[in-house]
View 1: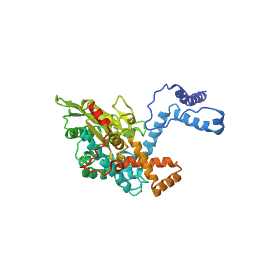
View 2: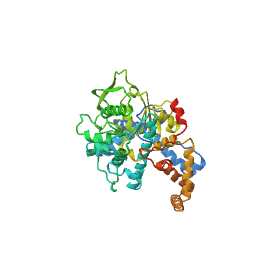
View 3: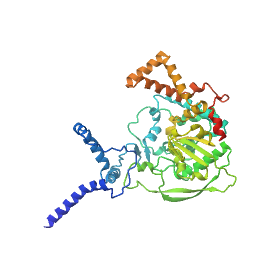
View 4: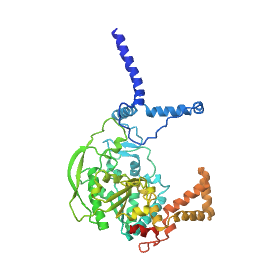
Length: 462
């Protein structure tokens, strides 16, 4: 009788285990922590005779059920924790961990091994030419904005793989010949052209063994709270020097222990474990503004990568800036109640209504410093609306007029299975975006082109 009771209980438990996931899927009674990372949602398929007979419905239904299974988040975290705790393996293929639990993402690892260049170019020569063109466009934009009272500069953020190079794990398969790094090429170009820039990358390499606070946390891809706060103090003073504006002074208070803030464990979060690898408590600094009735809050416009978020989430930027619009990778707009995407914004108005414009990228993202921001800005400032498209047609005609050139594009379209006109458009647009000499001609520090969009005067008058 006792054995029968035990079997009955085990049977009931087994049935509950089978039923509970389905019940959770339908009711969502238990609120589980969502998984971190990028996911592609599978749509629930529509059943019809055609999709059923072809098997498409069954395949799509399997994907949908797998992604929407009850307790899926908890089960995945359990499996990930099991793999990590017993075998020190992570199921996220973009994450690498060294023996001391320092975590790095794949593109930072690539930068460390000198392979980032191959994600953008076929050779070092192509990369250098692109960076020279970008530097020329930076110089032009700096000169034009200066003429209208707007300060412009580049902020070179640090890189975890450079500052913490002793902790970068060895990765098999990265056996390609190392290429150049943009962080080694841009500063000399900036110096030769007189482009304003602030190099935190170099500075952090110099102070990493002497500062009393961590520049990076093991589980984050970005600078620590303390590093970002002290960097902000340097950054604000540089802005004051460049613009001549007496900004509110940043006061850095005592350090305190607190549970992990946003971004400080971003790499560990995408591992989707059950528990923290080491600790979820870190040191942070309180920040305030020193009273100064003569201080002025400038309008800041920033385009850059996620390192700028170190300022967004560790400082109350409203205390220091009248407005502080931020375009994430020149795409998503932050801190602007009127816009969500950069394409929606009148670029001329955004530039000329700002007091300070900052372009900010970390070393692993510098190869694509332009990201069409420089091109779009200059085309808008130097040409009337619509002129850029006319220039694009002119470039396409020039390509057609050179038999060897046009033939190479025909062959490229054929080899890639692409439409010829689309291939021609792509090549012409690449030249328009990356060869400033095409639409500005030759220029130097003493001869910045004088052509301007007629809308500029009206915008400045506002």
